[in-house]
Image (cartoon, rainbow, N blue to C red):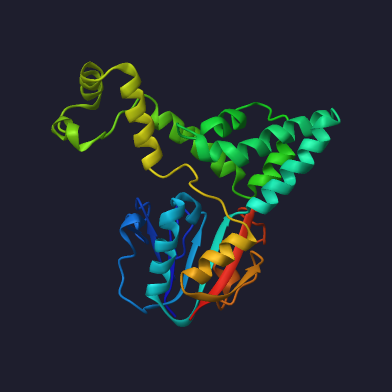
Length: 277
């Protein structure tokens, strides 16, 4: 059986062909999924991706899923995990009602669920306002936040802090118009850019560069919209499943949605599987 794991990040399995934008391990192939999937038609028995689809713009998400369909064999499985908009919306409404009752703990929970709903879509810097919230010591509603984040809470907090530190005041490539600057040290390039453009334009370039790297969410999905887009991409019988439930043989042995103890990595997820026509 030949399996494909797209946008794997740090969670991958050697029995899969794992792809991410940057390779973090010899088992991970570096590739930009905006350029399609670098494999021929009908060569995989399963395609899996977790918290990847929401990073594609709405109009490009269908093309990406069609690519997933293309590389799958007929009557084989796609498994998709995305942030669950329905669950977030229901939690938001509940938190809103409790916060309106002036319940202190739910005022904090309301703040967090608003970040889940909006910060991940509108942020203009790594980690966004979520990072600021997670930097609190102590986090005022730690149990609720960890319940939402799941088993990856510690890793995510550490990773966000590390990424924020690494990216602080760094300036990378901007536009092809400034390609001749690439051989110049970054701090010199930043100063030159600030001379060439005004402060507002320079800030706009930096924000655009950050958003084009793909961290912010471009769209959100619920059970209805995810099933619909899977059908439009060429799949049939989309069904919501649990993190430890799959038509992929031996799914739980790969520990991609839950750790060996069965703890879900991303409990805010919607898990769905479908079959290629």
